[in-house]
Image 1 (cartoon, helix red, strand yellow):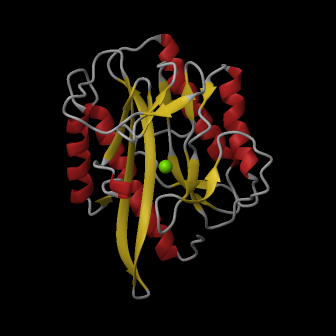
Image 2 (tube, protein in one colour):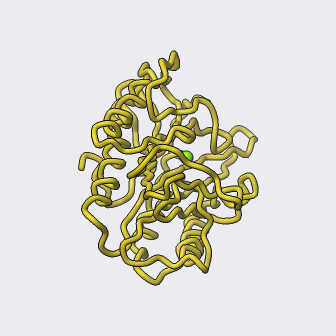
Image 3 (cartoon, protein in one colour):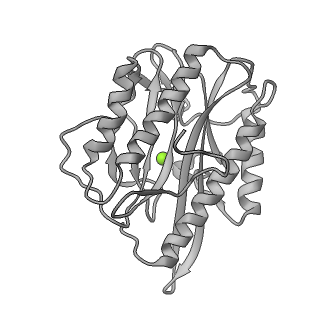
Amino acid sequence: MIIQTDKEIDLYKKAGGIAGLVLEQVMKLVEPGISTKDLDNYAEDLILQKGGIPTFKGYREFPATLCTSINEEVVHGIPSKKRILKEGDIVSIDIGVTLKEEIDGKIRNFIGDTAVTVPCGEISAKLNNLLRDTQKSLYAGIAQARAGANLDAIGGAIEDIANKAAYGLVREYGGHGIGKNLHEEPFIFNYRTNSKIKLKEGMVIAIEPMFNEGGDRVRTKSDGWTVVTQDYKFSAHFEHSLLITQTAAIVLTKRPSEDINE
Ligand code: MG
């Protein structure tokens, strides 16, 4: 889907802004002893208070507002009262916010989708590097995103950072277009595929690299959602939603205190 009007762009910025703001608030709550359900309840209340709708809740029957994926969990972890964060954990927090607005007589969805992986208390230097490098690869992908850019420019920038530190690069999941639905074409690979697809001005996409400290293989647990590394080594995930312009990508889901150039 291509967006063109200033009103549409403003609505994407508003949805993304709520997602970034709520995510930043949730990040501040991460500490030993809090459950992932506590994080989820807080996020849902704040999204609703800001006039948004939790995008993930009910999406393909997903039961929660956040995906919370701890340690060896890669993505799509389900928040639970029984999952209490402890010192040394890392947790990926993924959030989607939808605004429903009437445009030319039709109700339309405007979605912002963003994720970070954060430490709970003190973590090892090695894990700190995993988080730092995964985020760095997201920013490197964003730096390549503009109208006319081939998808391999994004995937290649991410893949190069994973390879340099010999991380396992998750290939089964990746970024996506955003439009009427949360996941639309094109699929944004986190590696080179000899792609013929070029980004167009007005596209909204999400880039979301996932790096593992061990091997690249993942599997889905019996809950049907939670993706884990096959070797149970830890995994990190970062994501932003972007609007593609002629010269660059505008980060729609930037958090209030995030420095994209860090
Ligand atoms: Mg996404």
